[in-house]
Image (cartoon, rainbow, N blue to C red; front, top):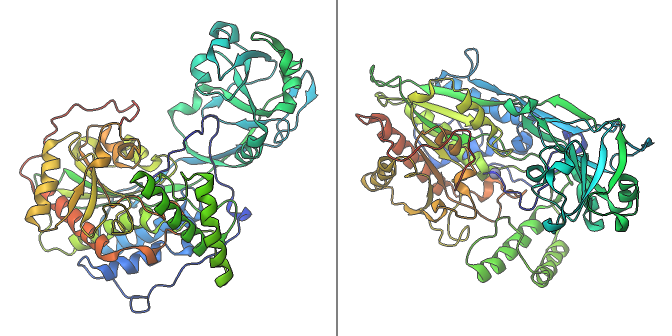
Length: 559
Ligand SMILES: [Zn+2]
């Protein structure tokens, strides 16, 4: 599941190059009784454990899309897919589908000037790329537009055309307000300067696409000390409409390919008439890599987050969006004492790798287990099963977006998509209301009432014993889960989806999301259920009926 960046309006988050990072680990080894054992055709807790300890191992380096770790993770899945005997359904007869990701970073060779005077990027200004092809700033005049915090002070749009708009007060939505401006300059409060410094020095990974040629506006964040150079007068003397300095040179960017790939494979159906239709089963193979700021003590981090969660849940009744967040300063201070005592008790176990055992190692390995299980069946389901392990989910659903825009089977032949992301937790202590039969369902009736009903009836008829939590499927739910995992990319094309998850927990997007904290019985239970739902949909004598309006595939997702 990818993370919502609240308040990140001007900025794009990125990742540093691997070589710049320190490696460290606190991971425990796979219990000896499972180490090196081959998996068996049936879905078992032992197999899931064996697989997940491989897939979420530190050697996978956090499996970030566009990095060597991402390539290693997908190499494991592809090897297994081949061994199991699925039919490759990626590029050129392989099971890999290449996704055109690339990295983008500020080029220190940038030669931006104000009134002919050279500026130093990363000191005098911080440049933030907004995608597409940034408009040139060379020869442009700066215009002061007013205080963005009080829109009534801002100059009208036509006055900003062809100029670079400088505002005081942190701004959002300036691109909509001034579509004909060449770019934006925002004055950043002193305490936020280090944050912008980090953002502008980081590398962001994104996908090549139709939008790349669109002309876009660069945002420059500047410390208050730079304001006078850009304005030509002290900030206090600037009035909305004041014309400032003339810019010269330009902001330059370093661009490099960042290879990443989906793994796509088919189990052919047994019915000659129905085998050209597919039930898609998906998970995401990527996670978020290695901690940019270096290693921290695993146990202190987890103890802090646990304590923070208790306090937050006691006050609100639900988990914080991000572990360790949402506390008052007093609440935070009360926890620090506890972690200090942990540090006194024993040596630190430094950790810098985001293993993503639950997110989405659990889903990825569940899908492999299902594939292995079906491949060994004497009688296969009538429709074909299409297994897709998507990359780039954590960067913004890129792998699923690309697959559904460039499907390797006809898009209309996909009758449903079943997505699993984070299905290895959900027990008491993981989430309020958690228990061994806890499962969140999202999206299952948003396009097809029938599909939602099937999920319910398979749970009953197969005696799976799940109690479904639909709260995160509610229209407008602030956690926005419906838009935050791969299934949405299918749903936007009118393909009915089911998203299953055992939900958020204290290790979500933390260094501590490791295989020793997974509930393997719970994971096995969800895996078996997912397989049963897939078989049921694949064996229906008709396509699941779509009885709700289809969204606009190019529109934006609405929870
Ligand atoms: Zn995630």
